[in-house]
Length: 128
Image 1: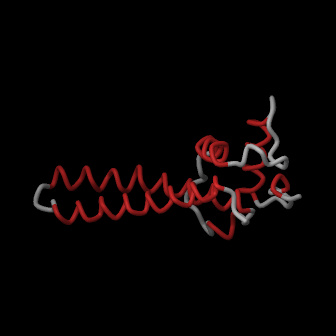
Image 2: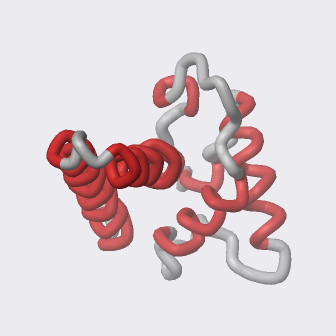
């Protein structure tokens, strides 16, 4: 069974998807006003797309899915610190498999880097 935090993350993913649809609709609606259309486009492409990517990656990480199953040939590496913040916010605080304490930040960053680089057992923190 998924934890409440994973459900909350899934809801955020759906909200970001709706946000992207809204900006795409606004781009079409205001196509005669080039300045406004461009603002909507840039927000959708730069902000919303990046937010959606990192939320999807964090969701996959927390579910234990391999990185290469989510992104096949990415042009850029994801921002580790953004991923860490999302994972920290949505990891189950009561789950004994998630290490909490003084070295948590560095341990989770190492775990994320191993996951991205495809190292075996990079999701060992999720296994019982």
